[in-house]
Amino acid sequence: MKILSVAIPCYNSEAYMEKCIKSLLVGGNDVEILIVDDGSSDRTAEIADDYQKRYPNIVKAIHQENGGHGEAVNAGLRNATGLYYKVVDSDDWVDAEAYHKILHTLKELVGGPDTVDMVISNFVYDKVGAKRKKVMQYRSALPKEKIFTWSEMGKLHTGHYILMHSVIYRTKLLRECGLELPKHTFYVDNLFVYQPLPSVKKMIYLDVNFYHYFIGRDDQSVNEEVMIRRIDQQIRVNKIMIDCFVSQKITNKKLKKYMISYLDIITTISSIMLIKSGTEENLKKKEELWLYLKKSDLWLYYKLRRGLLGTVMNLPGKTGRKLSVVAYKITQKFYGFN
Image 1 (cartoon, one colour):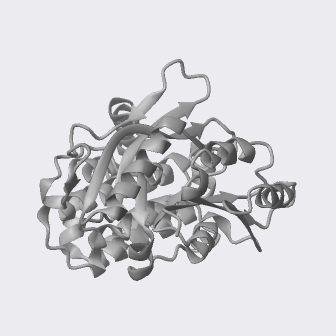
Image 2 (cartoon, rainbow, N blue to C red):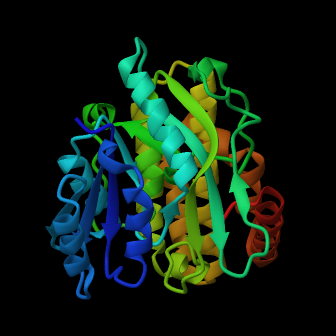
């Protein structure tokens, strides 16, 4: 059995997917690489098949009708045979040295008396034109290189979250918690991390810069103009995250606090994109989102609404909305989140 399954969701990725695949091949026979061709119209399928022919014991090409990023992640999970599951986007790549350390650690854990549900590592923002590459690391909040629980976790500050780039989940846990991401929806990476959290009991943090997250393509989903065009998808993810929190009876105080904080920042991003669009239609959508939260859980609504971010995102009138945008830009620069 493979130690790690890595899914690479690909849609018209011919220009950059090989860099990603080659970086993952370094893992050798311990790894299963699942290249998911999500209905591409370029040479993506051909490249995937070629790598499967060249590395039949490592690479598996999966072809499906276009279902979006989430359905590609779902397809990877359905086909995964590895004990752990990782998603690497086709324009990103991994560091070889950190990769070997993670695989070595996973093998030791699998062979030992203890197992972990989630492995956390650092990731690098590889932003085009940036002289210094920002590293998202967790050494101030998480115990290093030892198994720990939510109760032993320190404080993760605003904008400092465990993202898809930094997480590896136990495959069976993802299946048991019923993870299935919505089709034709961007921003589902937040759901991928968020929904399984209450099922996680034991974790390990490796202080290595494993994942390189490329930022710079004009059509990238995190581009603000693109986000505003796809705002309905962001709202869909936001609402599912609200449902996830409300439906779980979370007893651990630190986990509960962390999940509320994560939901706070996602709701803030949804709100600010709706404000920045400047249309009456989107301002109504912002009101509807907060009303959805209020109807779902009154306590959670007041927790977020009366917090700093919730207050700033709901300042009244045109002047209030301008102040909201300014405050968001300051927060974004100060905390460094994308």
